[in-house]
Image 1: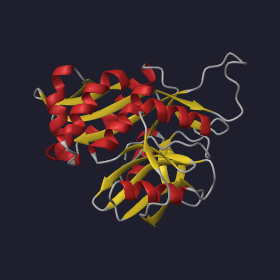
Image 2: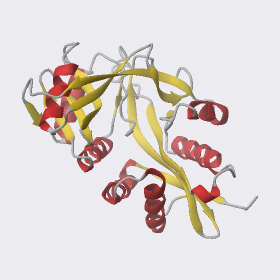
Image 3: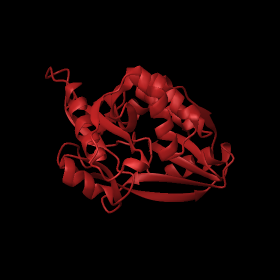
Amino acid sequence: MSAFEIREYKIFDVPAMRRLWHEVFGDPEELTEIFYLMLPDMGSAVVAVEDKKIIGMANVINGMELIERGVQYIEHEKEPPVCGYIYAVAVDPEHRGKGIGRELCLEAEKLARKRESDIVCTLPASESLYKWYRDIMGFEPVLRRKSFEVKCEARDLCMELSSTEYMMWRESMLRNKSHLHPSHITLEWEKQFCKVFGGGLYACSSGICAAMKDGDTCVIKEIISAFPGDEAVIAASVGKQLGCEKAVYYLPSSDGMDYLAALSGSIPADAVWNFTFD
């Protein structure tokens, strides 16, 4: 087995990391350019190096908080748990099977905790990887969600929001629920992610959503409504505004598909999460 080194990334690693991201995930160059400009304010990354070449990476987003329902943090002089998220783990195809992915994830978890994350989580890219994360890191599926599909039609007016406006709406609507509170820079990354794929952050009807385009489908990455049942109205209307034929959105469901992986019990099963950038 060839030797490789795992270390925290440096600014001069970014061109190689962007190339690896594009090769593994196929995302637009614009997306990776934005991400690595924002990464120093969001978190950090670890890379695998062999013969001075970047052959793997795992990005770490820090600073998000878990707000638990019913906990009065200011009154009890408590701080919400800080969340770290392992993102876009990639290994050069020619170097797979050497245990590089395993070492990257373990080192990424250490880096997240070094940066004061109380909870570390990730969204496995496929169903089979939940077992992989369980075996390596002890992570279990902690949230579940179900997908819904509607035909796009203008059922209500929609308004695009800045990340600051979206944050205000989101926190107001989730004040009585357990939820992830993203940092402002992380929410801005969510907006930029959606914009690269033809979408953005929106207010519509009784709620808000983060949406992007995938061909003729509007993919709703997050949808929050003040009134149960309005999600379909929001999805259909935003999808129509984006010029799509159909819209797909997700809602928490105890009998849905696995959504997030973390240590068992670290995240309430009813928490509103959604910021996984899938």
